[in-house]
Image (cartoon, rainbow, N blue to C red):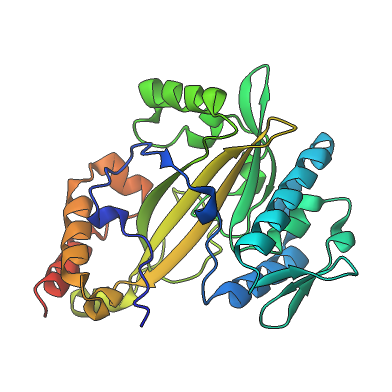
Length: 301
C-alpha cells in the first residue's frame, strides 16, 4: 500500500537553505506516479489557458529544446516501457489512454517534452554574465513567476533566498560551471502550503490564505516537496533543470508507519528557521500553530 510522502528531506537530516546536492542515478531521473495523467491534464489546461505565464523560450534555444525532447523520449521508453511508447506515426502513447504528438509542437520542442512528464523543465544557458534562464515550461512553480524571472541570472533567480548572497551564490555558479555530462545531480527542498494546488505563481512576499484554527490547522496544511535535478546537455552544453512537485496532506503522517518520526522532524526543522527563512517560506505567521499540530501528530493524538 502506498502511503505517499515519496521524499521527506525534513526528516532525513536535510539542512534547510543549503544547496545539498547529491549524485543522480539517471535511472531515477524522472519520477512518474499514480497522479501522472491528472498532472499532465493540468499542464494541458495551463498551456491552453495561461501559456504566456507558464512557457517562455529564447528563439535560439530550439536545438537545445530538441535535445531535451530526444533525451526524455529515449529515457521514458527505455526505463518505463509499460507507461510510454512511440507509435509508428511518431506519436507518444502514455498508459491510460493519453497521446502526445511532438509534431504538434514542432517549433517549441520543450513544450512537447513538458507534455510527457510531471516535471517542469527549465533550460539554463551560459553567457557573458553567467548562467541565465533561457527557456522553461513551468506549470507548477512554488511561489515564483516565470514572467518575472525569464532571462534572469542565477543571482536574479535566487536573490531573495536567505543566505544566498555571498558564499552560497558563488558556490552555485561554480557548480553550474563544473557540472559534467556524466555526473548529473539532484536535491530536495520543502515547505508547507494551505492547499494542494500545484500551480503557485504568486510571489514570495504575497501571503497565502490559511484556514482553520489551532484545533484543525493540520487538516488544512499540505507538505510540498520539490525534487530538482540538474544535468548538462551533450550537444548544446546547456543545463536542464527539472522540478518535480510532490504534495501530501500533513495528516498523511498519521497513516504512515514512520509518520511520527516524520512529523517530529518537520516540527524540528520548522522551529529551526530564523525569521527571514520563515518569511521566505510564507510561514512566519503560522509557525507556532503548525508546530503544535505536528507535535500532536508525533504524539499520536
